[in-house]
Length: 335
Image (cartoon, rainbow, N blue to C red; front, side):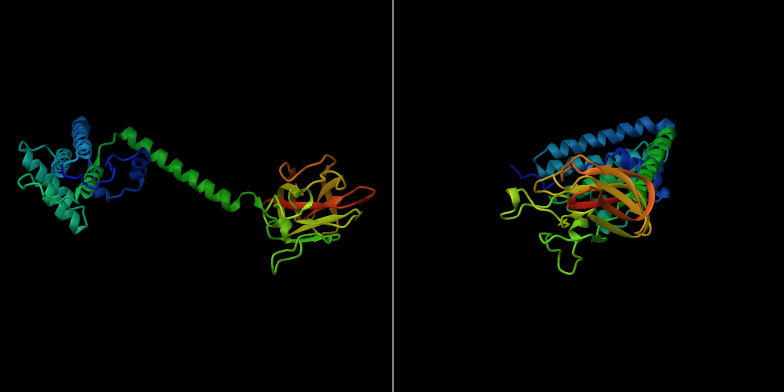
C-alpha cells in the first residue's frame, strides 16, 4: 500500500474569532471578496459543506492518488461556489469552475499557488501525482473559501461587535498593565534604624537592604540556618522603636502595603506591635494600620491604605521594650 502523504490537520473553516476579525480587518481586500445574496446563501453553504466532505475523506485516505483526487474535487467545488456567488451560475460545471479560477487567481500573489490552482482546478487537466502538495492544496481551499462572504447582515453586525469588544478588552488589559496598581517598592531605596549583623549580604553593587524590596517573598533554606526552615532579607538590632523605611523616590498614590515576615521562625515573639506609616517628607508620618497579631511569610500582613498620597512607607515598632524588625519583603501597591 502506498504511504500516506505528510499532511497536517488543516481546515479552511474559519473559527468564530477569525470570522469576527475578518469583518473588521479583511485578510483580502474587500474588493476581492464575493458577497453572497440572500437567495443563494443556502446553495453556497451546501457547496462548501460538500467541499469539506471531500477534504475529510482525503485526510482519511492512506493512498496518495486518492488524496490528490479528493483534494482536487474539494477545490473545484469551492471554485464553482465562487462562480455561483459571483453571478448567475453557468449551466456547464466546467465553465463555472474556470470562472471561479479566474476570480481566485486575481487575488493570489504567490506564483506557486497560482500554478497549483491551474494544476488542480482545471477540470480538463489530469490530477497531478506529486505526493508533496496536498497540504498546499488544503491551504488553497482555505484561501478560496475565505473569499466567499456568506454572512447575513445580522451575523456581520454580531461579528463586528464581538471584534470591537475583543479589541476593547485587550486595550483595557494594556491600560491596566501600564497605568494600574503595581509594586512601587520594587528596587527602591531602603533605610533602617539599624542593621543587625546577620542581615544577608545584598547582591554586588546593590544597597545594603536591597533584599527586602527585590520581589522575593520567601527567603530560601540555607545550610545550618535556624530550624533549617529558611532565613530573612533583613533585620534590625534589638532597640527601642526600630523602623524600616522604603523611599518611593517621588510622591505616589498608595493603595495597599503588603509585609512578608521572616521565613525561619519566631513570628510575633519580639516584633510586635508594628505599624505601617506613610509620609510625604520623611519627617511627619501618619499611622494607617497597627498589627498586634503574628503574621508570616506565607500569610503576610495586607494593609488597605486608601488611596493615600505619600513617598515614604515605614514599618515602625511602637512597643515600649527593646524590639527588632525581621522581614522578607515589603510591597507597596499603587500608581
